[in-house]
Length: 302
Image 1 (cartoon, rainbow, N blue to C red):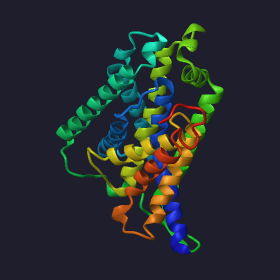
Image 2 (cartoon, one colour; image 1 turned 60 degrees about the vertical axis):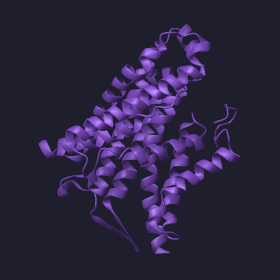
Image 3 (cartoon, rainbow, N blue to C red; image 1 turned 120 degrees about the horizontal axis):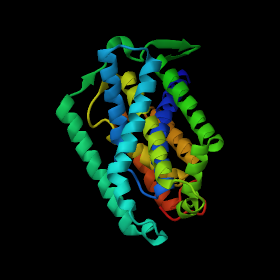
Image 4 (cartoon, one colour; image 1 turned 90 degrees about the vertical axis):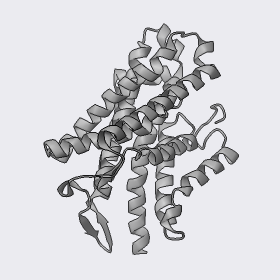
């Protein structure tokens, strides 16, 4: 029983990481109706930005998280300007909802993700980069019969605060209300005076900032980072978004937690090398039995 509780805690922290990344996918899809396949590289950039900060200045963890949040937000805005905005020259409803528009932006983000990954590899090399030992989140904590590390609590706590902050922004600020309006009806939002370009940039900033923070938290948890580290979490976050119904933030968070907990508990029954198959199994089940996602409501089929 103690082992099960320990795996449950690990699964919750892992699921919260997936949730931070999945929210970026979900926000961007809700506003633009396209998938940002460069989002995994934002996660990687956050990890390497944190590494540079620790090596150069060794600031407290809170400062690193705030700086990485800002770096991720700025990177997300730059990504939107280079990979997405050029395809919004025409704003009629037919163009915005066309398959050609979706495919063009998808390929653009995919190309930029490859360029970013290769650029990181040219600068830092393809090998694993170790983070300073004194900053790693691996100090053991005994809670009754269960032994975890401080990284589990820090990841869970940081993720919870960021998710709560996101809900506050979306429901109680002008930026959040604009994001919700554009997500609901981009043309209608434009007609009532909302600056949709600025709102889309804010959407990328919020989603990318959260993804970058997830990257450095995972890097500190495992003690090493590498240029392709964003691929696997990006895929699992994408699966969580699909399971949640593509544009449902609560759905994406819940499904990310389901994936994280399932992966952690699966090690009880099978070898850990098979853990990555859990997300793919959920994706197949969702596409077969829940084509609109578990929380998709009346949305179009995935």
